[in-house]
Image (tube, rainbow, N blue to C red; front, side):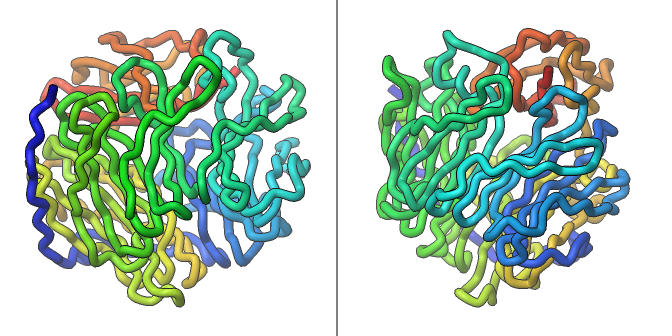
Length: 449
């Protein structure tokens, strides 16, 4: 039994405008869902984007210096919200899938020309969409290697998967029922080695987690109740005690909080409020952004109904889960989705933000040494996507490599820098490198056919 430790989270509001410089990479009407991905395997993080009021899905190729070239995939997907990419047909280029107000669609990439197929035309408020061999996660005994589509259908109160028959024909199966699901993330909350699923219930003001049972996914436990307008959530080891905790945003409460996995098995969570003054708290992401060995949190606040008073903030962790709030930007009206990566290749983490009211995608570039900590070390992994051997460098600085699947389940620990991933399930993985100076660097990879 793990001892319950009561931690006081101290918030001191600072302004960090000098830490980051603001660059509008695109005027993008109704910018909503964004996702970072190396689309052309050149080692630079590109971007996918969906514009809700602009009915547009697009991708942006990064030249390595934080300058992006836009390619529009579709400008006729009503209420476009989220987008993801994978090589559906194994022809070496990225295909795409996206959700609109009522539709789930996918786009076949035919040498830069996109052929649109509507998978489901009459959904009620579909939201987050993710690609992986999800069938294997739900039933590990029957891997098929095909790219399935997971989607939260908010208006129907379901999390569902569209199974791929291997020929890009899709059939729906509901995974579990949940009131107005908004966001899904992974983890292993009961430390049983199998993947769990973390979901925010916007309608019930709850955060719940689900596990794989004998007959599919079953509820594992409740993380939070009375978390009004539960929105973005992520699972991860916030307090570095070996089990997965939860960080979440409550839109209606203007709140960001983390929830301590008290017993290490997901049976009980203790809430620690980080901030209750982030207007329209929306999306959260945890990482060690200042490279001091503890987990910080980046978050967006949408603002009021008109997108006013929105904020992009960093909560710096002192190592004991006492957080200091620093406002990075307050000029992105209706700030929603975010992505944190080294977009300009200078070894520092940058923050990409979608402004749904200001109709823009903004790159907040961290100014060198602005935070006053040592330079972020960037992990080089190639090729990416990969279907054979993954190479990792610099080899002489590595202590250990860990690889996690999209649910947060660890699938490999090694000291090798050439790793055969050909037997991995197709989909996304996170590579975590522990360096010889004990710093930790992470990179997302895609295992393809």
